[in-house]
Length: 216
Image 1 (cartoon, rainbow, N blue to C red):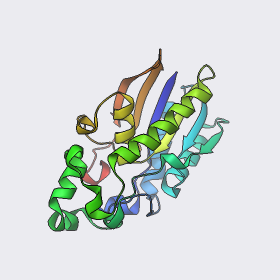
Image 2: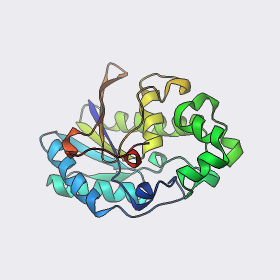
Image 3: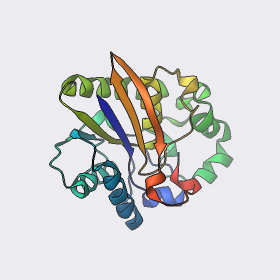
Image 4: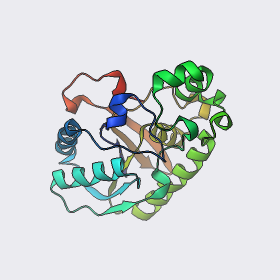
């Protein structure tokens, strides 16, 4: 069974370098609609039986546009546990501002997750995100095993925590492969009760040079 994980298209807040968690949202950029069409072409020959998405508009819109552009009749189910981190007081704040005010928290969140103290910013922990997202993915696998492959649309930070933990990595190693880019594709295979990484953060199909605001 193949699982295709997609990070949502780039939004206005992404472009502005603002943290965008489970309590914030901003519209997809016009360029993102084009990027989603390129992703649709990349996935056109893949047999996908069901798609799942976070309820947040930036992810749900990405999923809807993607399925439409693929010209396939793929059912889409909204799963609340696929939402992004609750980022507490970081929500809607600029990266550069928070790096000055709370540098140790931001560094830990982005590079040293084992040292991340979510209580300092009234946010969700890595442990909480791993628990809810892994439960959601394991349920999706149980429902679809033997029926076909699945598409999962979610968010940068949540996807990194979700996927790396599915692969058996500890929270300290969640960032070992770096982040995920907007409209990127990450491919896992589920076989004999285990998840195997096939491709991490594929973006070549976007045919562009990525910027620092594209990846988290």
